[in-house]
Length: 402
Image 1 (cartoon, rainbow, N blue to C red):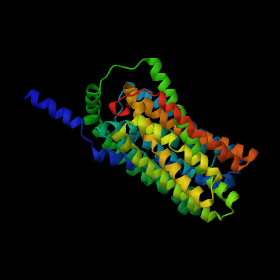
Image 2: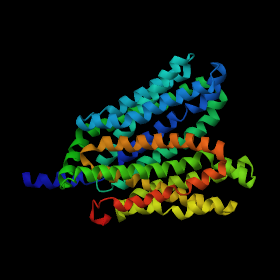
Image 3: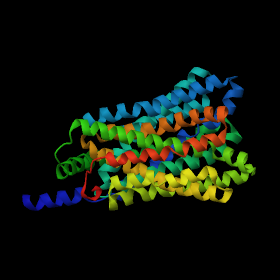
Image 4: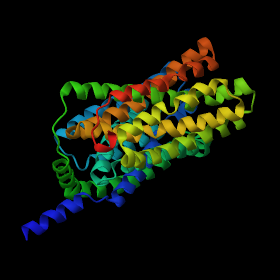
């Protein structure tokens, strides 16, 4: 009887739990949709509270610090002590932050509200990535792709909601989005129950099955440093397109704002497609190979983009976005496999970096555009994917990587 039970447990741990993966992706969509509402009310806040741009910048900084820099610390804590119900608790923080944000009539309350939304996000991302890893079975890349696609969709829907509801009805309309937080709390509470009763056991079983001799600490540190540089090249280049592509198209090709937005939409659609296909391709062909291809493979398109006509600029941007976006699921899973005992820390590190690098990159490139011009920005950024050559120095963690 005991011998019959062991294979059953092992088989169960190797299965992909799709209902959990879809629940996490759905809540990621809701989370990123809600956190994208904060910038939408900046014009309203600036007018009603008589704020200047420094005040607005401090609100953004408060959100970025709590949502980005806290993520690795959250992951480090939960690596040492499992917290199955951290996810619904994180969403409670987001709910309260949105409620405060909808009613805030003082600057201090605004900062507290921004911090609460940021804290909810900082707990949600590393812990939901951990749950995706637990539920993935052998399809870790697919799990991360699905999880990250939820965030991409949420950011897009958040922008739509901001344009259609918040911009029209003002600050108080944010309270309606609290209903989404309540839905997410219910879903994540059930995910937490699965985490407690099944997820922890699955994680332990997977850890035993995949146990290998640990890599030398120096090699792990070097590999993590390379991954950080790859994340830097990816997200700074993507920030250049997400934040300034419309300005570039309008200035260089003299097209309308509407047409420029259409080109931007095509690029963002390509990023979403790259995110969902990157994980399964890493599962199939090896994560190191995909990391190598997905970042360095974009280099011909980024180098050609500053010299292209309008049509080819759009084509090259789509291919660059598609290829670059496929890297991130593979980078996260590769990092988790590199340091399997620190799933939360690694997830928090890379998701925090993706937030921080995007924001820092957008600010720096904006300054550079003011000084040297928007076309110069794309000329400089065209070389960023060349950093992908460092992937050659990553160790092979699986047979597919060799």
